[in-house]
Length: 209
Image 1: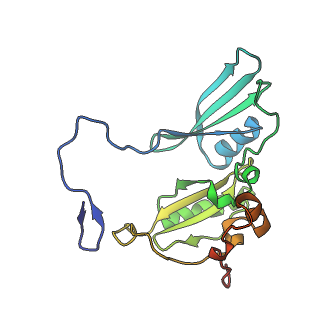
Image 2: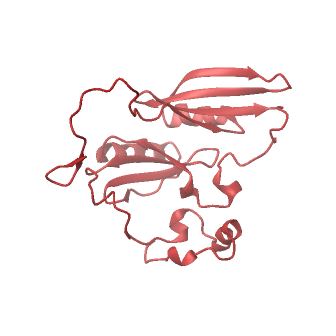
């Protein structure tokens, strides 16, 4: 790996390999208790077209409805909804984090906004559709907005604001944030999830955090 004039990581030129190369995600698979509400949100609020819809009959009983949405760049996000399937509970946390007792930031999914202007446009578009959206968050290397889908899953639109470099790739202290900023306001919930010895001192509340 070479380093550019500004420290960017640059892959050395090489001939195409006959083997498989990394091409990103094909799709992400999630679940929902209400596929109709989920479809309405992803299609009509986020604008992701449904491209494959299945009803899967389960031999032991019940069925699964399955939808794939096109999020762009040949990448999909899919949701399954089980109805009357033996061994699958009728109620569970499809938002993932509440059931685990961890901050919503621990499991979240980010979509590409394309540019800072595109991010700002998407934020206003979501607000106009009644979605509760955060202010634009500056991560130094990227900017983001955060919101939740009907299942309680934390979603994000994000855009890079600069190239990542060798310094970015080194593990080091960067900043501090509060438990509230992570999406879990009650520290006792973290202790419940991780035990009484959970090191919450790492999550230091700072002014405005």
